[in-house]
Length: 198
Image 1 (cartoon, rainbow, N blue to C red):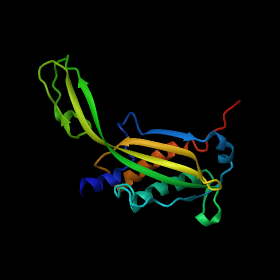
Image 2 (cartoon, rainbow, N blue to C red):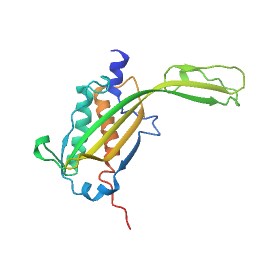
Image 3 (cartoon, one colour):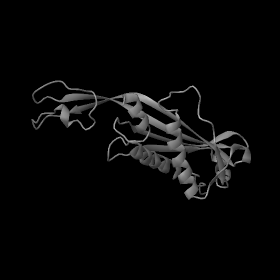
Image 4 (tube, rainbow, N blue to C red):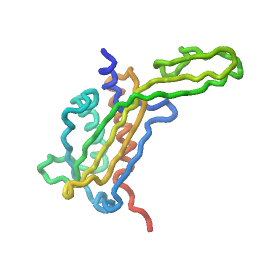
């Protein structure tokens, strides 16, 4: 299987490291908080056309929708067809970006830093010798998943959740779905937003 296809399986779902997890954030229209609290039914917006096929394809579409549908259903929301007057519409976006990370290794204690110690097993550049600090360069790909909630009546974006993570080459379908579920759950934990106390 080629690298791009393996990345499709891992897209948007792997933690940066075991300790840091997936980085998520949310934002919303403060004027829509009251309405968001009354929403009960939703439908899906159509997937983007002509976009990056590593991201926008039926496999990823199905995995994202399954994760969102399960989470919303567990909290009492009902999915309906677009023509059935839903309270809100939900859509998703994704991206893959090439990233470079630099880390300086202090060799004060004198032990060597060899490529097989590298936890990411990615393209790594090593230089220097002796006890001087070494700078390690890692190239990796970062995936982003965005969930958008649109008020069906006004057709305005009222809530957005975002998840970012380092991608891995080695990911099967089961692990991919499990981690997509985790990213979606983390975002939707803050949906709907709580009204601010006065």
